Length: 68
Image (cartoon, rainbow, N blue to C red):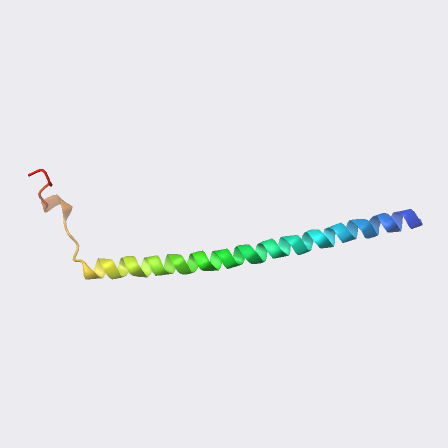
């Protein structure tokens, strides 16, 4: 291999390493966001279930409309 070809390959490798590091950082941030969103969804789910248990279910068919 010629010296120019080796230098070109080293440059490409350096760019690829930088890209991999950048992508790794992005993926780590996204995972943190996903973890937070999952926790929020779990809390909302638990709160909805607690409200459903606390309030007896009403049957809307037998309710009088508000304009009566």
